[in-house]
Structure formats: structure tokens, C-alpha cells
Image 1: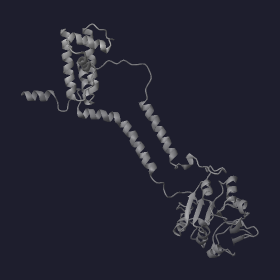
Image 2: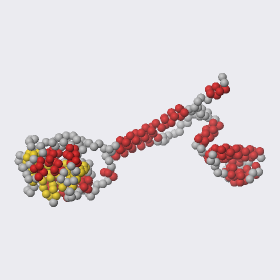
Image 3: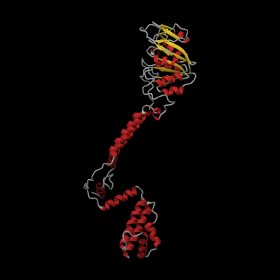
Image 4: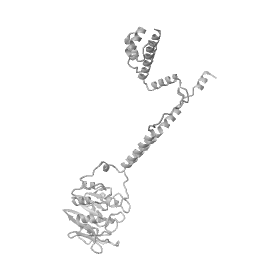
Length: 396
């Protein structure tokens, strides 16, 4: 066997002084980093999902983005194609903020309306369309509720309102009772009608006894579409308000809070982030308890420790740290050789070394306490000079 073969067999490829290989170091790094990487990946996925736009459809009844039978997406899209800006909201503060002449506010349903909201509707300057809100219609315009139709037969207009006459007939279960001076259209049996128009404080208030004629399922029936489009599309801007039980409006000028301006996915995202923080704390948190002494699996020689630290300094290009360690060790050994205590000050060590070696005190100070080297060659030169100085001290 040749010398080359012996060296090749005793030093496997990729093995360094600490006994590891490239593959083993990579495997160790992966074991240490896989949990943090998984957490970061989970956060990135959550952030991407949160950043995606909200779905443009919903299942909320009478919502303008609901394409289902009970939704009103069809009428909202037709209004948009005819130049009407439809603003959908479930916050009454948006209704108050949008109040202006030429604006139409449509309120669909009243189960979640409170007294403060009804009072505010009474004081708005915008035209109102009250859909399926008999109590609100009575409070705002004196339009009372009646008994609904019991059949699906078309109901002719039988009034002078131009919107109702354009529709001709509608199919609706709405039931309202018009007050004196108001226009009631599409009557059923008895005194109830499906549509009432009133003038209140100089603005137009239209009431539909039921919202069924606006839904996607019934919009094409009879003249439902014509009446809905003409009533809702009289202005260039329509505020489509669906009352909500979690609407925080309480009658103040504004309910603008930090929570109300955040998107709906903010709460779940914050809870997820809190869970990630708790898991990371449990995983990386310090465990308190008594120290457990474990015997080392091998005996590490002092020389190996020194060489290992030197390799770490070299890998990190820590020339200053390496030079400080060399200088401190040299000064300590020289002081002990010259009979100085370990606590001797630097000037005492410099004077004692200068007298023992015959060197200039300034040169000894520069060698033991001078500026740190910045390159590998300068560090090697400093190590050689310190070794020479220590040899001169031992010969003295």
C-alpha cells in the first residue's frame, strides 16, 4: 500500500478536525431549524390567505353580492350598469356619513334596527327607500303596516305614481296602509298596498311592504324589475344598508374605532399569531429546575479545546479576540516569572518586562497592549513577537 493510500484511508473525504462531515452538519442544522422554519412557513401561508381579496359573493339574504335565490345581486348589477353607484354596508355610521342631497338610502329589513337608528333615519336629508320595514316606515313617514296578500296573483298599480305605472303589475306579499296625502299602489284585498310614496320634510320616502320583489328569484316576475330599478335608481348614488345585530352605532356622531376599520379576518389572524407566540414560548422557553450533571462521553484534551477555539476565531475573522487572548496569556506568564502578583497593573508589568529584557518600555507596551491586528498575517507576526518576548523574559 502506498503512502497516498494510507493518507486517503486515514482521512475520509469531507471530514474535518471536529469529526463531522458536510452531510452530518447539514442534518444537524435541519434538525435545529425545522421547527422555526415550519412556524415561519405557517405564518407566511396565513398572511397570504389574509391578503387575498374577500370573496365577491355571500349568502346574506337581500345582500347585493348574494347570487342565490334570496339575494339581490341581479338588481344591484343592473343598477351598476345604468350608472348607479351602489354602496353596500352593514354599518349605520356609513349611512350617516353618506347622507347628502341626491343620495338614496335603501334600508332592507328592520329586525336589527334600534331607536337611535330610526331617529337618525328620520333626520337624514337623503331620499329613503324602506323595504320590509313597517315599523320604521310608520315612525319615519306615518306609513302603517297592513295585512299581506295571500296569493301570487299580479297586483296592478292603480295609482298615479310614474314608477308604479311603468311597472304595471307586481307580484308581492307586501302590505302597507298609506296615510292621507300619500300615494299607495298595488292594492290587494282590503286597504293594504304593496308600495307607498310620501313626501316628508321635503324629501321622498318610498316604502315597499316586502323585499320579495327585489330578490333574484322573483325579479323577473311581472313588473318587479321595473319597479325595483326605478325606485332604487332615482339618484346617482345608492347606499344599500342591511341592518346588523353587531352594528355598534349608538347615536353618536361617529363610531369610528380601530376595530371597526379593520377587515373581518383581523381577529382570527391575531388569535393565530397569539397561538404561535405561545407555542414558540413553550418550545424555546427556559426550563427552571435543578442542574443535572452529566458525564462527557469523551475526554477532551486542553490542546484540542485551544485549537477548536482558534478555529472558531479564524472562521469568524475575530483577529482582535485572538490577539487579546495571546497578549493576556503572555503578560500573565511574564508577570509570574518576574514575581509580580496576578493583579499587577499594566504599567508595572511593562516596567518589569522592559528591565528584564532590556527593551524600550514603549515597545513592550505596544507589543502587550497595542492595537489589535486586522489580518491573519498580522496576527501571526504578533504571535511570533510575543513568543520571542516571553523567551527573553525566561532567559533573564
